[in-house]
Length: 467
Image 1 (cartoon, rainbow, N blue to C red):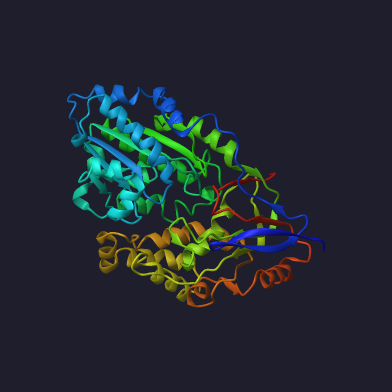
Image 2: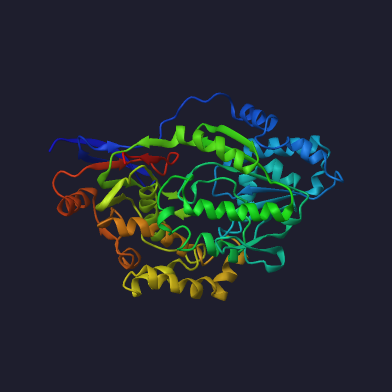
């Protein structure tokens, strides 16, 4: 068999591997940008979509000292957005006469960690953090006094939302549009980032993100996205006024696209632009090879569940036809140490072990979620700051289920063998060459191969296959 060499991510290094000459290599390619980040931000704010300008909304408040909440994507997201869009938003509020002490900045971290002061300072920038010192806060999904119950959607999902955001006179959200299995694209982030536990349990549960009509990359038809929109509409109906969004598309150059205004109008223009930049043609594959960066999504790839999510995630980002064929093999190229840090990821070890004890039953794991997610000691660790909520690992299993059921085998090439990968049914082999030989044994000598060498070190992409 004729082969070719491809350099793939393996932790903080790259590893040359040999794959069939006809393997498809899929990675993000930069396209031209129409202006600088600051110019794009100002242009979007000058002509918002489906909304008056931000300064007009602020200027119309009954009192120029009205309560203004600026919620931001949490520090897991690109810092470029905060350095470009957030200052532009704050300048417009100041120009409309809104005093700094009338503004609260909320890190919309959902069930992610309540980020620590050094992390928030580094993310928002020293100038912004100092200017709003004491008024930069974390959302707390467990703070019952800081949440408001707003009923249920037609899907039956609880609408539980941040009280300060509900009661604000003006709610602004600064965030990102990026490829994500959570809705097809991220964006319009108040629903998740400012939701309480009861709210997130619905759409992030197995019946939400795990729903068969959520297991693809099209936000226009995705079940999860419909549930997210229903909650968003309930929040806006209660508040009686729309959220003003400022959202960015980013890559290694920084901000490369901006959108501002109302949620629905941003989706209409933002999604096609994201499609143009992030969708690549991808024939169906019997073997999918994913290079894993040292950290992505929710932390270090040494964490076994994060590493597993790293190889399962791209398998759901298909349009038209699935990337991974049923019974195919997924190979992660990684230096994962196969560990879990209980101080930053409480509940992860418990969830993984529960999955292993159940014989790797997703039904049984679903029944374990409340036991772990409501464990008082694990919740206490979350509320202290710096740790994920103990329900969080169950959301990862819900998103990984599609690939874990579709694949005939998931192999980690170069990882450390041990308890956690074993409990999750992941095979660990010492080298890519050994993993490749095992894949050929399982799917045949001439498999169709897709290689994703930089999926986690460059902007994520989606895969368009012929239906």
